[in-house]
Length: 236
Image (cartoon, rainbow, N blue to C red; front, side, top):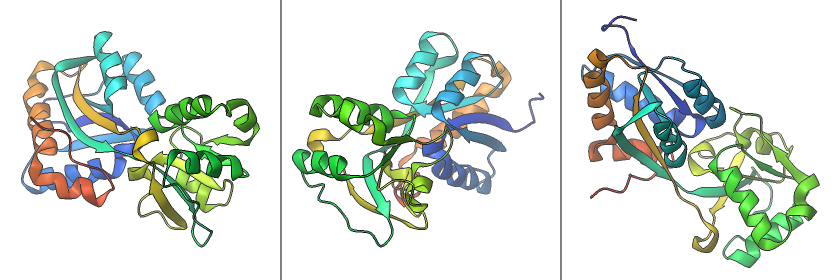
């Protein structure tokens, strides 16, 4: 790898589209080339842990913190890029269940023939909600986990599940899918997606990587986040 080769990064699928647009905007203003591979979050963390060489790592903030504590990313270079709420989606043209309050969401889940979820933060949150509602055992046989890197929206669009739960950013603008609503505040979990330089990134490339991260996190690019169903990161 030379100093002039593209910066490389790895991210979870939730930020795939927003990162693609951020990279395009960065390079349009003359920024250094950046290539980011988006895979399932669990796979991304595994590959970083196993020492695969990257300059940038973009994951949910808790996953990035775990990598930092193990010395795989430089927490001092961390920036928050976007936030994403969790929502339910249904196949286009099918009825929208009431999701206006905690009890209604529980009832909608119980009424569903099958519920799709992911291996990421939204899937973990669903598991906690099912335990909280006391229906984890009852729902176990009706849960369909999307394969790593496969959006839950595809399960919804193909009719494999009645309800699909995932980050809003992975449900918007998907053919054959309609977002019913974000989860109500009482059962919502907003995930912050953050980025940092990987420990494998050579020192000579860190300045370029940091410049891209500063650009990506800037308020001037909030419209890109909004276009993909994400919110601006919290700023001081």
